[in-house]
Image 1 (cartoon, rainbow, N blue to C red):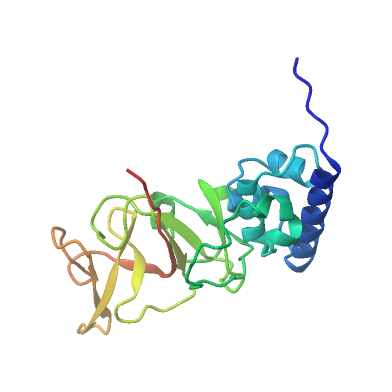
Image 2: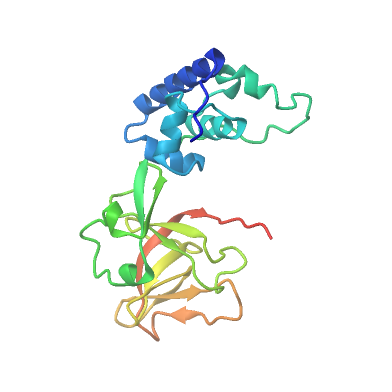
Length: 239
């Protein structure tokens, strides 16, 4: 049975500095925990993150950069040893800046769950969905996420993309919305108001971006707006 090697003094010091940066970030972002950190950094499980922070296993460059990206720490102050491997002479365009990490848990629910909504009276708890994603804290307690299926919203929305829906907003022309159709399922389309009928009800269209699919109209079939898209998370693939 192989024995784990002892970390050097420098490696232990790196773990201590990373742990201190994590505790500082955690203190300013209530709700952050190691499970969340592992997911955001793409490091698998909470156990892996914990081993880096407790100096059980040595940091590597990929893990260092991933964690520092999430907690907005400078990797060079954590590990000058590892960051020496980065080619500092490489020219680059600084076209990004650190962004605050949202800590509000948003459940990813199915189209059937969303379509079953009769009125927004109770929020979906995180455990009610198939997954949890995190977003900004200024969303209402009713916010939820849907995963895109099919190709009716190509090219902007691809299968596997996720959209966060805010039921506490009224749609504006051109917004992307989730709506309940006559089959008690949620559909995701572009919203287009088309006036008022004789009974005073709003007429609107739900338009796909893919021209191969039909536009839906509220005056020809049952349609009910569930909420407005406030965030789109694209799933990028490599072939």
